[in-house]
Each structure stands twice: as structure tokens, then as C-alpha cells.
Length: 132
Image 1 (cartoon, rainbow, N blue to C red):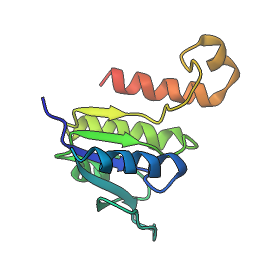
Image 2: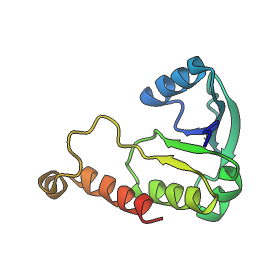
Image 3: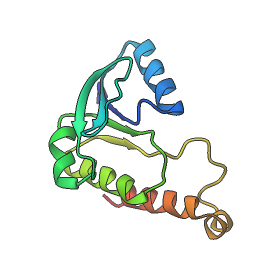
């Protein structure tokens, strides 16, 4: 199975710019960058696709259809956006969804989830994508 078409959501952030550069340097992918309808930012590379500001599942599905991989590289400040992106990816037939779980210490640790809401939210996204 070839994973050629990649959509990066959050390409203008600290991590997203690095991921985008890495994807471009790999010279192996057809890269698209998601931009919210209200955004005026322009990423350095990739074709731009517009996603709804509210991250509605029904609004995301047509944008995600045909993508092999969706990478979420935006902060987990609103876990519901991540959950809707994961759900829409599954419904659109995306082969791989890579959640924003970069650089965490053991986010699956029960103790970490008990102490930090961020890890509880990451766990919700993990459960959602593994049960799809």
C-alpha cells in the first residue's frame, strides 16, 4: 500500500513548519496543507485546501476524501477539533491518521492522565482513532 497523498493540518506552527519541510525534502509525497476558512496565513509549500473553521465532520469529509494520510500538528487546546478531524478522516477513507501526540512523555500512563488534562485529551483521540 502506497501512502502518497498527505494532508498536513497545522502547517504554520512551530512543529508544522518542520513537518512540512521534512515532507517536502522527502520528495515522495503529494502534499496538501489545510487552512481554516478564516485564515490568512500562507504556508511555504504544498497545495492549500480550505477546511471549515468549526471543524465540522460533514464539512471536513469532502476535503479529506482522497487523502492517504492526515497529520494533525496543531495544539490540542480543543480536543473536540481533534476528535472531529479523526472521525472525518475515518469516514473519508483516509488510510492513516497521525494525531498531535508528539514529544509527550508516556501519555498513556494512568498517572499522567490523572494529573494532566492534556494527556486525558490525547487519550480520547487515541481511543477514537483505534476504535474507528
